[in-house]
Image (cartoon, helix red, strand yellow):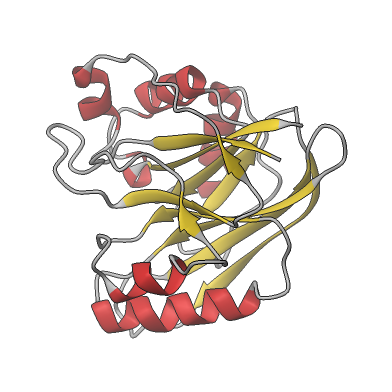
Length: 224
């Protein structure tokens, strides 16, 4: 059996202290890191590449059309394929998209991870989630992680969290706002074949979380 740590983190376009955000990632030490709100415009590629280097992880590729989502990986996994897809929005709303990476874990087991950042509009969240799930319908072992912008009573959440397809595997601990978390917005879902291992916390000062982004990261250890 192989264990991989999967994390998700909304970095708010590096508007806060991205050095502290990199420190958080290093402390969590994920094998797969699903990111939301990474820079998309001025010097975006250079800034994301520099952030990946600061975390000690690898960025498989550019993220044009991703709506600010992307995925980093550790050197424990081998990237087989990666791409980013745009989701339709009405101008001048923030662009939306999702990132997909397929990796081979130690031992050769393959896994697909998806980073999502859903809309602020409930109806649009549902439309985007349906499109993402349809695009991933033929995948095997699957992880969907990101900022859903809604809780477990939301319609988009319920589309993902369906028995025998996907279930919530990250801790039900609030992640937003980072200073005093009250809402569970950042989550990891996994297909039933991935076994959840006991959660291992990472001790970081509250001030570090609050200064790094407006969200806190969440993570889970999964056994393949």
